[in-house]
Length: 236
Image: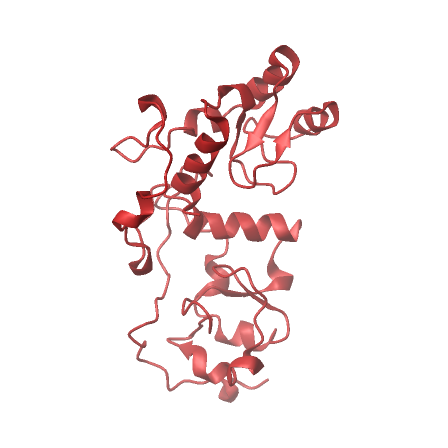
């Protein structure tokens, strides 16, 4: 491929497009505001990289495989040296071969870093709150509500919690439950897998996200609390 193949007449970003350049802090994954996201080098000034991997692309935001042939060609989505997703209009296209294994877990974590959690990140234009966000949230006890300063109500339960999750299983017949995917880790095999993890913060044995809390520490009503916590943490 020659550099002449690169579309250089793209110095103006369309109004409905959003370019992501600045590092975004995220205290769930212990990433500070001044640290680069692990995929920053893949999404910025990446037109040559993307053209060289044209049949091997995925969007971190949409988490979908992207074939620019289905959208009229890549030239329609190259601006300011970066390639934008034809579905979400953000520069989140990366070659799948550049995503470290385990692929699905890494892609999920990368998505959550920038888009899934409210953890110390600026809200993008399409994520403004509306009154309807809270309409179907269950009513819970005050100590489980989302505190006004924005601290997730389960963050202490989900951080440095390996011993607590194991003890919840051995002492209380509980275990761990993932707020993101709902997976319950409540068998001996599950706990053995958790013991083998090389982190003090437990990652879900199914989806790999570190949003696991001890089962018996989830306030009643159990299902409603998990639903609320998921919406607060992941906006889903």
